[in-house]
Image (tube, rainbow, N blue to C red):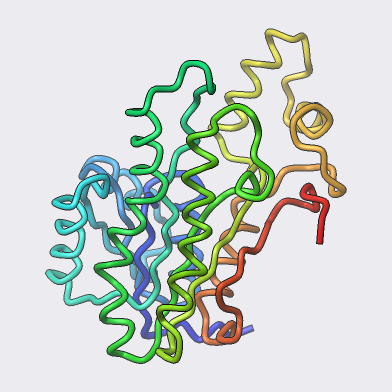
Length: 266
């Protein structure tokens, strides 16, 4: 399927590692010019150095999007490359740990800055061009916990829930502009960081540490779902690429779960 992304420019936040890196590469493979965002030049350079296909159009942009100044820095670098954003993928976020009885208000504010305000800053910078061009895509990465939060990490789930709410509001704001806005809410994704964290846990609990058997334990204890496994980063990236394409033009204001059926309601 040709996703018709040639000639489009995508900005992927937090694309120097993890799922964001796979999203950036996938969009480039589909023909887009991709701005790979990182917080430091070292992280951006390291991510770029790992790209083996020299034909992919991927450029690094650096800035601390937890501040207004850092977000502006990202936009200035895009302008320096002669680029304006057609597709914004707000991938950056962090599952900050904490419990109700110990979290401070400052930690609640931090969770919102990391998981909500960082996205809002980029939205405010990028959507004026999209409206003027009459075409654009905003894709926000949330979590299945915005549907079904746990007792732990309430500040994280609250911020991600607000991000998903923002998607619907922005889709209405951008009515009749040619710009669509959607949320993708994954469950647990198999990343090197997740595998490493669970292997440490497995050693303490006496579980097997090879991934095939360890994944069975994760599904049994932490992430029960009908597929019996975790999502791959590529599966999330493929959905991002489709929603970013002209072929998804009638999908708007949606929150699409990539959770293997873990959330059990219609």
